[in-house]
Image 1 (cartoon, rainbow, N blue to C red):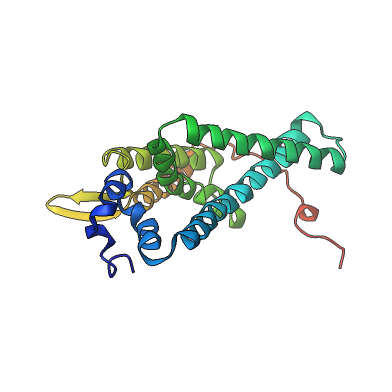
Image 2 (image 1 turned 180 degrees about the vertical axis):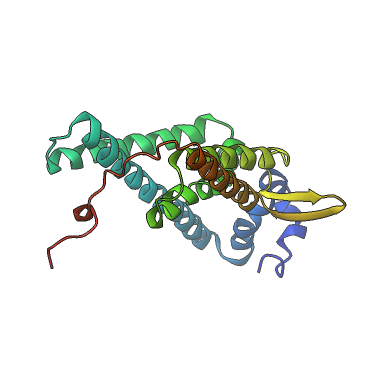
Length: 221
C-alpha cells in the first residue's frame, strides 16, 4: 500500500526515510492517508502493540528465573506466593533493563541482537528438541555442536556487518545463498553426531538421566 501511494517519492517524507529507512513506510502512509487526529490514534496503537510482546517476554523471563534458578538453587522450599512475588519483581527489572537498553544504547544494537536472536535460538534445537526423543546423542557432543553453531552463525552475520542473516555459502565456483542460522544448524548437527560417535568410541560416560516418569505424567484426570 505504501508503494502504491508513492510515499517514498513524496518530498515531505524524504527526511523520515533518510533517517529510518524502509521502516518509515507505514508511518508515512498513515500521515498521507488519514487526518491528524486519526494518525495519533494509529501511532498510539503501534506503540501499544510493541509493548505487548515485550510484556510477554519479560513475564517468560521472570518465570524461567523463578522456576529454574530461584526455586531450584536459591530457595528450594519457597511457597507459591513467594515465587509469584519474585516473578513480578524480576519481570519489572527486565522491563526497566530493556527500557534502559533502548534509550541509553545505540538503536543499531537492538536491531543487531534481534537479528542474531533467530540465529542463536535455532542452535538449541539439537539439545532441546532432539534430546526429548533420544538419549543417543552425547551431552558433550551436543555442547560442542551448540558452541560451533553459535560461533559460526555469529561469524556469518558479522560478514554482512550484522545487517542481514543471508550468507552465501561458496562451494568452489558455486555460491548458494541461504539463512545463516540454517548453515550454522547443519554444522551444529554434524559436530554433534561426529562428537557423539567419537565419545562413544572412547567410552566417555554420557551422564545419568535424573528424570522420572512422574515428571512427565500425572495420575490426576
